[in-house]
Image (cartoon, rainbow over all chains, first blue to last red):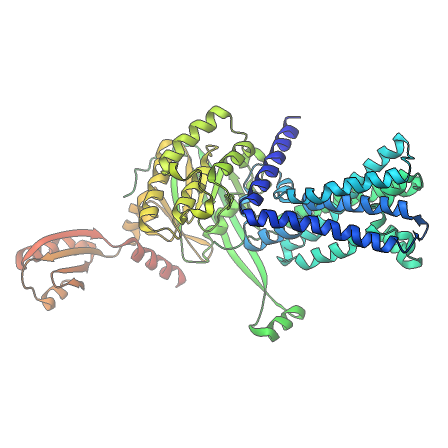
Length: 266
Length: 336
């Protein structure tokens, strides 16, 4: 419990420091807020443009897709606020320039620090409208879900974050050998973006690929289906098992990466 | 100026046996064609950065690692601090195996690299000190006492509220040292601490390290190319060359073992014959009134007496050969 308290305190401090660093340059701070608002507005406009012309995607109604869309972006923003930039972009840079040294000598879990060193508080600006969109989708769906379905929704959201964390960590860890992984990070960005659409719209091989092999369906589709009461319990188990296994593999791979770390000369 | 060294009775802080580190990388030919070729057929090059090193550090001891660029000093230091995983041999630092990076081990050490800045670039040092307080779990009373003492010792009291990017390299370095020492580490690794500092800041930093060494029962290892760091701060020096230890001992023992010549510095107060003085040893003219003569140690007294009796002198001083010359000779000897 004491260790947990220490890490919570450290997380709060990292949030505070990140916010102070973002506020250190006033024009940059206001431009960043402006940029985040524009990003969210453009997404909503795109969504509206598509769905005012198309009533359904596959077997998904407009309201259900709205839920899926809000869920995907909640996961996406949570990931972006916390570990994604740290692991995809900051960690490879630290490995490349040898500045990981100064993190390695701190008596704190290096994976925790590498994942959460820079918390992007600015993305909260985009995250809050996402919550509003989710509430709107639920309202249109008539709040027709049980407590158990809501609980499953929450658990599957966390599971999606675990899955994405593991994928990002595996890609970032490759940097210990290549000392560059920004390119791979971009593949991740492009691939996960597919998860914002109902994957039922794909057919045959691609459907199998995106649901089971690269289980993008567990990012937003599975939690949304859980809330809508249409989730196959077998797939729920598959989703939890898949994320747990991937996290174990990713952490093992990370430890191998640390052994291979060669730093840079002084 | 070497401080008295009486640490052989003190407990061991670091023990390295047969320590080795091997790297590999792919060689790339210059130009675009070289880069394309390397994508498909790179030539693997293996570098034995550290080879079979045995080394000890007692608590209370300040040891300087010196050696040419690429000798393996920093690699050794990084293995001792747990940053790099050794390829071979065993390491014990304060009863811990460094590369396991256990929390209790990391709380007992500090590692400061001269070229790196770990403090929050856009924020004042005070913010990073707070970060250290939480990370190292430093109790309030100890934190405030240590901070006050170290800030005063480092002379950075007036810079604590200034963002790091606005400070000079010397001020930033001293802030970093304070941050690294707040948790009162028992073993301190300093990698080229005076690198990129001007003479005044380098001197302040040396005074800071010396004061820290005197204040507590710490073990300190520093790497440096700056001989003033070594001469003024270290009890013992370890010369590393091509990944191997070429010498391990006190400065005085190094002089005894390797100094083949002594220097006689002569200040003249009248006309003197360059040819006559040159017959006594290897002559270097500093200016028309000053010269330095290098002679064999056994000949020093006789030559000095001869100069005093036969030349118009204002002052004469016998000094050891510069440490740089001795180290150059050791490197050269190892290369042969």
